[in-house]
Figure 1 (cartoon, rainbow, N blue to C red):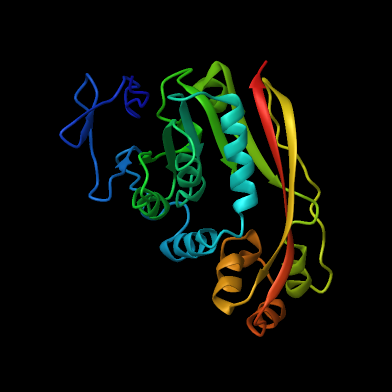
Figure 2 (tube, rainbow, N blue to C red):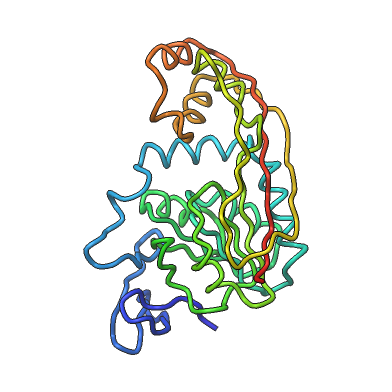
Length: 267
């Protein structure tokens, strides 16, 4: 069963000859990389979301396994809450690291989407059976109740849309930064580094059934890795120039990583 729907009229999309088409003849061609753009016609996705430099930085950093403990935790929850052949959706999938990680270990039907075409283009190039598409999190082009499990890491939380696409017995996972996440990086960037407040998202209509704290420490031993990490954090946009200069002088960086993975079910 196909689970994607037309972003224009809401009817189911079927794929034929590298084109997704609905009964009203709205059509969406599959790009050469293997993804499909399901944004409205006037929104290409090229200039939306993360740019190409940010996408490449994120891919290069994650591919080195620095956040593998989080990928392990997500994969184990998927193993726990789903069965072979179930549909899994990566919401705001970025360049596809977490989808590919789980797909290599589980026999599920994986889908992933992001607002950034730059991110989705990289995700589609990964060696995985997952289907990737460009879409808006506020209007997910997935039919109602079609997804057994979804995961959503460090992105805006749209509880109403998540409830709509998740099956009645399905789950949605989200991750937020733990108190000490990247504190070692912040010690370099800021004169007065701060710890995270661990604020959970507003999840109306959803009930948290599990919370998993994932902790570790990473050491980045090249400036390329340090710069890649910096570019994929919000600190990249509001760090004082003196902090950026201090970071540029660092050849190595050791920092704690800490995530809180929260599993929700429908109420």
